[in-house]
Structure formats: C-alpha cells, structure tokens
Length: 147
Ligand SMILES: O=c1ccn([C@H]2C[C@H](O)[C@@H](COP(=O)(O)OP(=O)(O)OP(=O)(O)O)O2)c(=O)[nH]1
Image (spheres, rainbow, N blue to C red):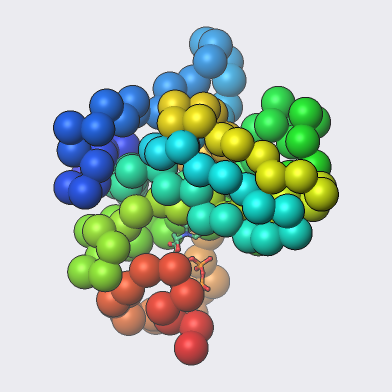
C-alpha cells in the first residue's frame, strides 16, 4: 500500500497542497487548513485538511500542533496528539478526512487562512501484544468505535 496523502473527493479542484516537510531532516509533514476558518475563544474547532492518508498496516500518523501557531496564539490540539489509524482512510462516513481539533484558550477569535500550516503529522510504527487477535473493521469517522 505504501504511504501517501491524497485530497478527498469533496476538496478536489480546491487547490489543496499535499503535505510537505520543511527541510531534509524535518520529521513532520505540515498540514494546512483547507478553508478559511475562525477559532472562536474557549471553543473546539475542527479544522478541515481536505486530506486522507494511506499507510502500511503497522503504522500510525500522529498529529501535533505546529510550534509556530501555538507560540503566537494560545491554541492547542484538544486531544493532545491526534491519532490517524491506518484503517481510517476511505471509511464510508467521511472518506478518512483528517480533521484537526483545535482549542482556542485565548479571549479573542483567531483567523486561520486557507493554506496556513496548523499542524504536523509524523508517521510512526506501532507494536502488538503476542496474543492480539483483533479482526474488527473500522466503519466510520472520528469517535465511531468508542460509543
Ligand atoms: O485529531 C484527530 C484524531 C483522529 N482523527 C480521525 C483518525 C482516527 O483514525 C479516527 C479515530 O480517532 P481515535 O481513535 O483517536 O478516536 P476515537 O474516539 O477512539 O474514535 P474511534 O471510535 O473512531 O476509534 O479519527 C482525526 O481526523 N483527527
């Protein structure tokens, strides 16, 4: 299967750039906002990226805030670190749209522009226990398996 980002159907022809690393040894692929969006104070906003990601079965994409954004503004990911599972891609609910849930701790709205890099994704390999036999298939999007 390899490892690659793709633009989801709803965001085709909207000039979404595929994530890139800044320098030769940067670990993170920069994730940009797919739309202009306002982060209202003391609220969680799901920033759309317009992207999905394919990766190998034993891999996960971890999402972190970009320090540029968090040092200029009092914002953080509401979930600390976002976990994008390898079987999230192409799920029937939202095609595997990568969303970035950001909390604005400040008192003023923050205006995010389309194309602004807000977070970064780092691919990591994960391990299983010896007796792991999980065979369940993912059906949906964010929060779908934990109900
Ligand atoms: O910041 C995030 C975190 C997660 N996701 C997507 C990818 C991930 O594969 C899916 C499920 O996330 P997670 O497993 O963290 O949440 P959950 O509450 O356990 O949901 P689920 O029941 O769907 O596993 O939601 C995002 O788009 N952004």
